[in-house]
Image (tube, rainbow, N blue to C red; front, side):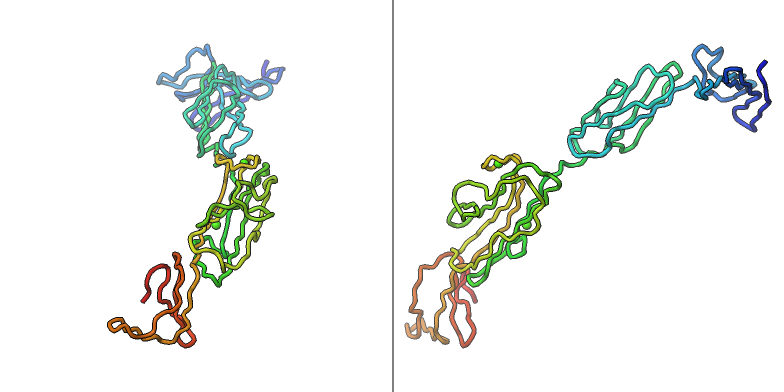
Length: 326
Ligand SMILES: [Ca+2]
Ligand SMILES: [Ca+2]
């Protein structure tokens, strides 16, 4: 005969007795008023119908796993990564299960037990798994379980005189160009580009000098490049105008600009032209009579040039940037 003990709870489901058989299986008998008391298929009655409590007998197998109900549970091989992100989901549900229904949070679903799913957009995705068996169904939902981030890309930076620009330089200034690259862990082979779009054409920097041929300055796997000075020169002699300087990399190392994979930065430098210094002191101009001192030096002016007049020890702009000054 099974050995029996009397048990009682104050409320809810009440166990009246517990016993164990020679195989180690445990039986609990009691009373319940719960409308959702879990029952196995073929139970005499599966619902509480009012009136006095219903009687129940529960069997726990020797390994203490109950033979009723299903519990949904799952794991993923990764929950965060860059787009597109492929995730292997593994069913960890317990109970007797006959079907699985996955919702990946991006509108896609699967009925496989252990599906692989690829996320093609960025964001947070809530994943839920519903398992169903003879003992019922259960759903496990994980809010914002999968985080798909942007693809990591190289980030190039170029600076002129330590500025992201635009900057204005005069003929007695010095121009320095520094570049840096955060490769973001990417080590693909790449073409490295340094170009200058100038008033007199587009030029590319190589370690042999500047050329108007489209050739990369350097070819190598990407690496982290801390601030690196590629140019340090006096502005003197450079024609006036707008100079746009480019630094970038493209991860198809073929000697051509590969626009689909080019990552670059620019900086704009406005170079002011020559200043023409008139070595005169406080000229008197009397246009009405035609008398006075006039400039005697005539130059072919170009845009952004200045004409200055020296008064005592200071220089005053007469014309600058192609426009009159006050
Ligand atoms: Ca910059
Ligand atoms: Ca290329």
